[in-house]
Image 1 (cartoon, each protein chain N blue to C red):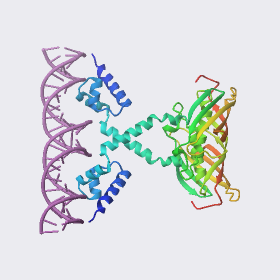
Image 2 (cartoon, helix red, strand yellow):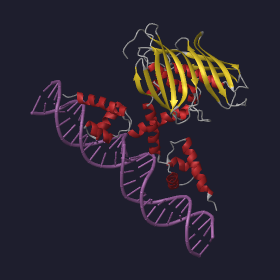
Image 3 (cartoon, each protein chain N blue to C red):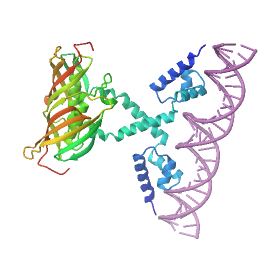
Image 4 (spheres, protein in one colour):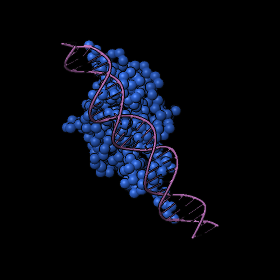
Length: 191
Length: 191
DNA sequence: CTCTTTTTGGCACCAGGTATTAAAGGTTAT
DNA sequence: ATAACCTTTAATACCTGGTGCCAAAAAGAG
């Protein structure tokens, strides 16, 4: 008995739709050389929804993630903000931030939290990072909650630049420290 | 003459579908109190595709961005890589990277490209950023293509650290410059 | 009242399916 | 061999969310 063909086909079908979820059943018949009914039985057994449902699911997912894209605006949640004085933000290290091999956060994510906060704490229409001097004291790991604290050292209303110092901690341990020089647009202005 | 109702309705229709692209024509008739044929004429005039096409477009967009999610692993496309010597990467500034007000890229994205490249160029099992000294020479703007070039200055096989210098250009202009100190795991190893 | 624009209705048709029933084919056990 | 079983294919009715086309009704505008 050639029982394999079915399971093989199921695997192939899964793989094909994984590679390209936009395939119709009709296109699948061409690739797998079986009738359209067989394809449909297979999808039924594998609990794979029809093309239109797949598209809808993908669209919904992307719609949700677009909604949560303001999370891209500022990295980390701001817990406290005293403009031109200090600020605190929280950032939790999750899968997409770490090297999969080591579970250690990629430096630029830790930097992004600090940089976002340094910019946010400046009370100005436009604030841009001019330069920075940073140290990754110890690696941050998957699941760790990073607390970044920013202090404005010189608000420098005259020079158009501000110095901001940021320290990031996991618990008691410091993981990151940075000195940022931030350009500010003009004098000061309300947020 | 009440010519307005039509244009008003067109605006409302656009707004409704902007808020919720998952509406069928039938659901729109309920909201706008006109026949389904009118809705369809309106969509025709406004060049708004049918529900299924909208979903498909959204799915395709999200699929593309999922495909480029390994872009989350390394920020920017690596164009050239000579391990322990040098590397080049390309990163195009798009909507999600800029301050919406000014169209200027957030510093941490430009940093991320440079940092990713500095880490990638190190030929070691594990490479982590230890510290960095960076300058944002001029702002990078929406749509600009940033070319980052990294040079390993001291491979430092003995000390477990490497110094990498990165310069990022838009055309002929330098937008970013950074000196990175990268921890490397042990001696050297194949990638 | 006439002319034009806008709105509505009806009908045929399409893609990409679901759901169901039935038949044909090979496999296996008895 | 024959019955029992699994797999595959076929055929048919039906569904959603439309398009395309034509005609008629309604609503202004002049």
